[in-house]
Image 1 (tube, rainbow, N blue to C red):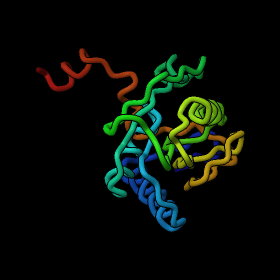
Image 2 (image 1 turned 30 degrees about the horizontal axis):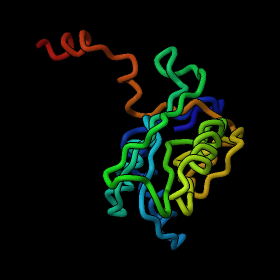
Image 3 (image 1 turned 120 degrees about the horizontal axis):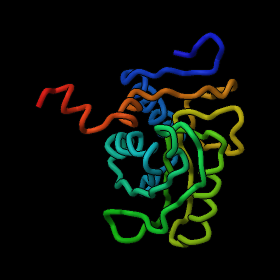
Amino acid sequence: MLTEDGKHLYVSYDEYHSLIEKLAIKIHQSGWQFDTILCLARGGMRPGDILSRIFDKPLAIMSTSSYRADAGTTQGELDIARFITTPKGEIAGKVLLVDDLADTGHTLNAVIHQLKNNYRPITELRSAVIWTKGVSTFQCDYSVELLPTNPWIHQPFESYDSLTPAQLLAKWKV
């Protein structure tokens, strides 16, 4: 649900999963066949996992991080892993790059630059996200929602960003 001022978007688990299913439909309807899904951890892990199951394709993972401070609400310097975790040796062929959103576009631009320069066995690369913000400098191949007001997206699992083991112990009285 988008707030009246357009500054916050609150997403339930049901809405989140529906959006991933709509993303799968867009990819399928394009007719593009790919060999591997490469998700960007952490945001792209949940969509990547679901798409991997729907398309029955191996899931590779590349870790990136820029939102670490203030329970994941403040963007800092972008870190991109040097290695990709994949179940089948080296990542190669046609690759679908998956993340949750194109925010500023900085992460996706940097990752694609790194992949094109350092992973020659990739013959074709396309990108898929759930949301694209209006300020994004990156244009994804597949996206479900364009957010022209650039709201902060409150995803359903974000409560875990500030949850501690001690709080879980208290909650479950273990």
